[in-house]
Image (tube, rainbow, N blue to C red):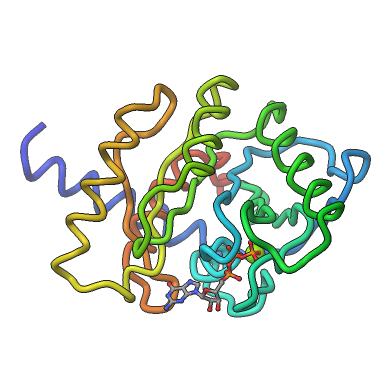
Length: 220
Ligand SMILES: Nc1nc2c(ncn2[C@@H]2O[C@H](COP(=O)(O)OP(=O)(O)OP(=O)(O)O)[C@@H](O)[C@H]2O)c(=O)[nH]1
Ligand SMILES: [Mg+2]
């Protein structure tokens, strides 16, 4: 493809992302047990990653709403699978984190296994975003999550978070390290996106990539 055709295609994808994420977005269900999972219908995109990595903040940044998904500086804030309907075309699923959380062992085990089962067995799940804090390397638990997604043949993409917290010079290094990890995993998307929910970096690009997974816009 020529450079000009590529840039027209990129601009169209960014516009499709902007439009989708400007649509109304509403909370439709919070599931703390398998029975309370909503029935599947629309394509779904799930936000996974360690506690405190910035999953709920990224849902808010993408949808341009500050308090749609509740965030906190204490790890373990999201304790159920929260489903949001975006414009009747895509469901965003904010998952509880894995790793350290200020909660009882029993509670943590319950939400961890519910999230793991959801990731393995949801027919409408189009992509899992595996969030990695750009200040930290990919941890064993992240690799374990990716390996189980490989086994489940679930499509996933690594998204670096909080890039406002690292120097511009370290950004390329963090992307290269995560890209090398993605290359070792069969089901991982080869492109790693670097985002900041606080400053907006990478948000338009992520919206564009998710718009490609949504149901088509209804004719006007
Ligand atoms: N500087 C900065 N801080 C961020 C960013 N994204 C999230 N945070 C902060 O990181 C903390 C955790 O954010 P959450 O979005 O609640 O994280 P989470 O992954 O949903 O956490 P759990 O629900 O506990 O698993 C909060 O204090 C956020 O304000 C970012 O892009 N930049
Ligand atoms: Mg959360």
